[in-house]
Image 1 (cartoon, rainbow, N blue to C red):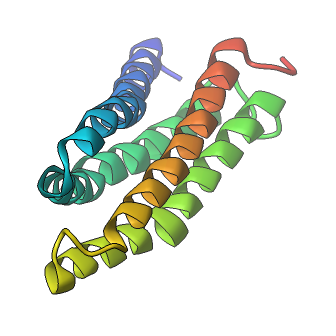
Image 2 (image 1 turned 180 degrees about the horizontal axis):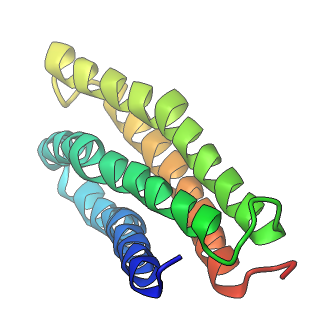
Length: 154
């Protein structure tokens, strides 16, 4: 692979990781502040997170994967290497978590707020559920970053 192309892909891979994981970690810190402000802040925050999930995090994660594949295929790596398999597994786990848990729970929260208002007693438990799931998701992503940096099995 042309070293300039590889370095460009590597740069994009790192930049997209910063956007996805850095944004997710930032949201966790902001969520702690929002939870102390009360129901109205939670409703606005939930709406903003849903927007960011669909328009920032999902595209960044998809592009990150699409940039990583040619780096392995055309670069000095192999899809059977432990660190590559761990990275792919971590990506798939977070993708499934987003599609099966975060997305539907966010939609349910949004519908509950629209239908019953932010004061509904079911809102707070859903927000806490979302934050717990996303914290575990962030831990998986940090493990993947560690994996990419240290390349176990290499």
